Amino acid sequence: MLRVFYSDRMTIPLPDGHRFPVAKYKMLREQLVSEGVLREEEIFESPFATREQICLAHSENYVDGILNGTVDPQILKRVGFPWTPGLVQRSLATVGGCLAAARSALEFGVSGNLAGGTHHAHRDAGEGYCVFNDIAVSFLNLRSEGLIKRAAIIDLDVHQGNGNSSILGGRDDVFIFSMHGAKNYPFRKIPSTLDLNLADDTGDEEFLRLLDEALPQVFASEPEIVFYQAGVDPLKEDSLGKLSLTHEGLMERDRKVLKACRDRGIPVSLSMGGGYAKPIELTVKAHVGTYRMVKEVFGDQLRGERLAHKVRSPELGI
Ligand SMILES: [Zn+2]
Image 1 (tube, rainbow, N blue to C red):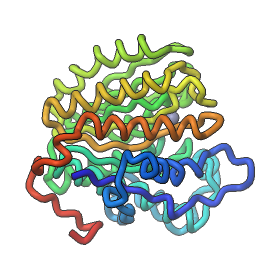
Image 2 (cartoon, rainbow, N blue to C red):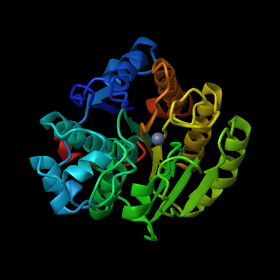
Image 3 (cartoon, helix red, strand yellow):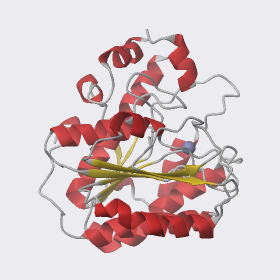
């Protein structure tokens, strides 16, 4: 069974001309259904994460500042969104969707969130369109509930996951792999377990070769779940990416990661990550490609038995 979570019913109110492509989330969900990649009954509205869950990865002061609208304006400036009640709701749903997807992945082998990948959010402050760190919150909650002992993060968004490494770096129970543009934001990178810095204009062949080399190192850490940040901003047409991957190259990237997880029987939970192509339809097409690969790689398993015993999901009331 495949459960994919979405949160586009809550939009982030933004001023005209803002460069964050908030429209892509709903477009993606509709496109996945209209192209027959996902069925309506495979798509679930994300539950809200609770304050308590988020506070496992973030300081109470920062979390309350976001929830109450009293957060330091300088921090909001770094996040890049104006504070609104809509931003709070959307941020809670983004994290809740990641946690729900991770639980579903433990149960069925694969799941995903049509949002998130908010890998620039640090413990005390967000930045780069990231309010709360969905993967850090999800890992720390599964860990504290005793559902997993070890995890890996495979972060193939073109921007380095500096928030993942600032919150989780140095722990011996999570392997963080980030492959990203060397000369792209964030300009001060915080070391992951394995960082691959790519030159501008890196194309499919080089990207896929480096990925092939890196994946065995990730799996040697024996993760019990993989969080896959499948950002599509390495796409050649991306306005922020600076790399030169094609749509076919991105799908091959996704196939490699998903197949590596499936072949080893390791649950994988997808977060959406960045994508800023112009026109935005090219980004949506790339995100659709990721879910085509989910269906292709996990096809038989999605119709088959559960991987694990039913994982209780308090956010969903089940
Ligand atoms: Zn990005």
